[in-house]
Image (tube, rainbow over all chains, first blue to last red; front, side, top):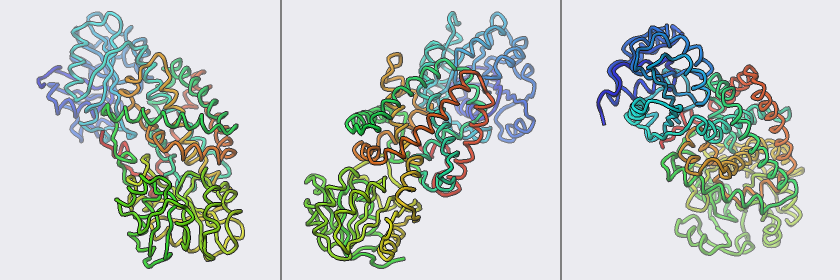
Length: 304
Length: 304
């Protein structure tokens, strides 16, 4: 471990993930210099106050010029515009990566705007919290979490290896897969859970018979768990659903079919069907805990 | 605060909630003596080893005899049988309560079997963890959580006041409502969240294109949050759905309608509709945190 992997890292966007990359890259000594770019002067000033970078830019092209690795850390809906803006400024041999929660769309949006000799190596660190902005970042965010690297067909092997090494230096495990497979896997492990959580919180907010105060007081019965991921960044999640439409609709259809079966079991009092499902689902949690991806403390170890 | 409220407390069932009541009642000095009943000799021996009671019984009637307060702490599907068994053994003036997650069904099942002069005061502590059994209990479980007391029409005011005082002594806030309103409120704040969580974990387990290993590795994207409540006690939850059928089906229908709207917004690329919902749901979490029912630490404060 250790050693500079990229001389100059440019972060386009400095929210939860961007700021965590800055802190983790610094901790690892993985980069020589960090250039921070964001459109908002206020956020840029905040990033400076937090000492997240060595140089601060509002213009994406100026920030990307001369960078060895540029990571797009903004909602994926902005990628095509950004790729157009930074493409001409990139030096030969530069690597463009990102942290978007969808991957096929990233290849479609970004690849056409990169000059010859610049390498696109998309990546997705599967880590985060419900908090947003440069103050939310911390160096440990990626420790023992998986980052998925999704090289497009024909990607430069050396560039892929360097992105892989970069994420390992930041504390992550790395797995490679195609962008399309990534989008299917994340549709079930991340996108559908968020959609369901947003939806149930919305449903609870609109009941006439039950007050908001009652929903809040009695939320410890299970509801409050859903409010955490339903408090995630709205722009980011809007873009995820718009850019992974097919896989999300497919998983939503399967979820709906399974829910109809449960609904029917409740309507007709089929206790055995309910019990069988409820018993099986315990095993998956045990597997996740054994895989080191979850705490085994009751109630996530939280204190009210 | 302080002082003995019930001379003899009998706990029918000694799982997570029963054992937590024993420990919290002892901490508060709220009871003189605790009788622990459970059918399984193994569980009874474990309760004894944990010193949860003063006396241990396998027979419910023997345990209930002479008790001032009997609390049913078993899945609600067993209530009618238990009420039949303990009814004749109850002394005049005794109070029968419970901790079931449904309440109208409890009144229907238990009231007909109680002798004249015995008071039924159902209650529901809205607190718990995903762990089960007598080892899972802890005295602080009810601290700053709500217990809902649901007196049936014509309930004895003094008996209701004593159950109210008992739960406050155990650290809980107390609210009273009708059994029917309770069942509607909990359908959205607890029962539907559990159903949805069980369902999505089941859906993830059955995908052919995605391995279980992938689901587990990448569960930090949101999915793992759902596995916690989907690891709750299967018997208890089977009984909840069988005994709160109408309210759960009603909430499920509303959830389904709202989900169809979201599905349509994704299909037709209506980003504004998605953004509007995702923005509104943040406010509910803030309300829950301000109501003291949730931690404000990122990621529930959990450490992987």
